[in-house]
Image (cartoon, rainbow, N blue to C red; front, side, top):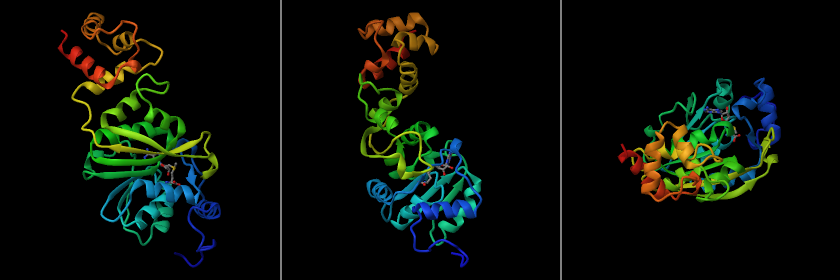
Length: 281
Ligand SMILES: C[S@@+](CC[C@H](N)C(=O)[O-])C[C@H]1O[C@@H](n2cnc3c(N)ncnc32)[C@H](O)[C@@H]1O
């Protein structure tokens, strides 16, 4: 910690004053296209660390440390922390705010990261960049390496994560959660918990991941079946490249109406559909 540091050394990192001071000293402005909404609420910070289960001996992965607010708390918990940051401009800030911790900071795109390199039973704890929250969660679930994921995300994505088949918000992400475990909304978080405030309300969501995931080929069918909410399952599958005759045979075998929508199918029916399509010439 430099002696010339102007802000009150005792003020917590999440305090708006410290956040402004850090941004000012390093000549930075939050970048909207990178989803940079920094956490400035100590209660939300404590809640996410606690709900996430960071503790000595656990392996915690974070996407987007930003100024290091959450990262520093995670390190304090005694967990082994790996954090992935795309924005190189934050390198000197993180050198300052994470000084004295043994956090592994990797600069690069979290979408390019090899999530299967994480040890089995890892935890994801993050204030996610909202523009890629679905893509990150998909990768984390599919890696099969994570026991739990606790994160800040748009409330609307939280609703999709907890949705059940047939429900208004049910889609690909909901079905994916169904295959790997289940989700809960821990708490809604108002816009004012961030600087700058995002356009939407957020939520802390926790995913419990225990399932083995779907068998081979099911995810591809799932993606096709749920691609467009307003279209029938039949049309979605045909648009994804399945021959109409093949689709019709599979629907008949499963006793499904040609007008049924993909989001009305249970997970078991989706698995059966994938098997039928595989077995239908
Ligand atoms: C919502 S901010 C969270 C910052 C900090 N954890 C906090 O709570 O204040 C999202 C962070 O993700 C970073 N980010 C955006 N896209 C990324 C990507 N593709 N890979 C890794 N980090 C990314 C942003 O630069 C930013 O630091």
